[in-house]
Amino acid sequence: MQPTVILYNPISTSPGKQRLPMSLLSIASLLMDRYDVELIDGNLIVDPAQRIIEQVRATNAKLLGVTVMPGPQLRQAVPVCKQVKQACPDLTIVWGGYFPSNHYETVLNSDFVDYVIISQGEIAFRKLVDTVHNGGAIEDVPSLAYKNGDVYLTPRTPIAPIDNLPQYPYDIVNVEDYIDSSYLGKRVLAHHSSWGCPFACNFCAIVPLARRQWSAESPERVVNTMQMMKDRWHIDGMEFHDMDFFVKEDRSAEIAERMIGMDIHWWALGRVDTLMSYSDKTFETLSNSGVKMIFMGAESGDDATLKLMNKGGKSGVEKTLAIAERMKKYGIVPEFSFVLGTPPDPIASIEKTIDFIRQVKAINPASELILYMYTPTPQENSALLSEAESLGFSFPQTLEEWAGDDWADK
Image (cartoon, helix red, strand yellow):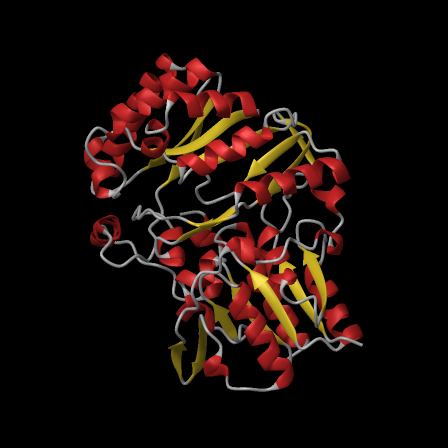
């Protein structure tokens, strides 16, 4: 009988909108040759803590892996992991993902998380699982943060080429639980076709996680996955949740070319300046492939603020207006995100951006808008973070503070 590893996906969205837990599926893909994997999704289970405790006791599992983003996932992960650790004190609890990669010291200063995997987790987590079960030196596990009096970091493992990783083991979840209906279609699934991002926007939590590295599936593998999903689950819509899908034009164009005739409408994320550099031929191919909407970070209606963000700088706002007009020509809906309330003058930034949004909507009324309030991220040499700190900002010091109502309401 193989030992069991439990993976836990804390709640991340409202009921009915859950997406495939792709990060944990990818982690699981490297474990299944030697371990039984139990994936517990907080989006589907009312009491994930009790389910985890039951599974630990039933299988004598030694290790729980948890993926954690700020927001709802963090707010559930903290009390659940505390409860699990109290009930199963010998269980090794490991966190990975955006939040612990950026705030590993805070995580390890709790009394219920034993290790943090930094950055891409597949190779490092497998090494840690083997070490916990078979013995070995913890300091030999790459990309690891651990506490032994002080907090220590081991060297990061190189980013794994995505094509070298196994396909997701979809059979360990009920995929039907993750099929949704939307403007894309009646049966919509999600996929990650790449990992990382080569850019350095200094308000973005991805930057310290990926360190400007990007690894992508080949177009052939991407489209083979789409065809498999169409054959098995009859999908007619696809959300690509890449950190940046459109980094390379030739790759984007080839994926789009291969998707023509598949009758799959799709959505993905990109950058305004990158997409403005694409040729008309590529845009025609994208349109013909079934892309319905592209998400882009416009972020601000002020070039000075974009420069402060390390996000395009000069003529950035003009490119946003240009891409809105260009996508109108090709029948692709632009979905723009904007960050409101950036320092040094949060009120002025809001007013400028609202005025700019009116310009965008005048050019392309179909434009969709996503508005965020600015939240600092712990990046070195971040002008935005320095400005925020000068205005009195500071990060919470404990996981309980991060998960509390006071921080959530700020």
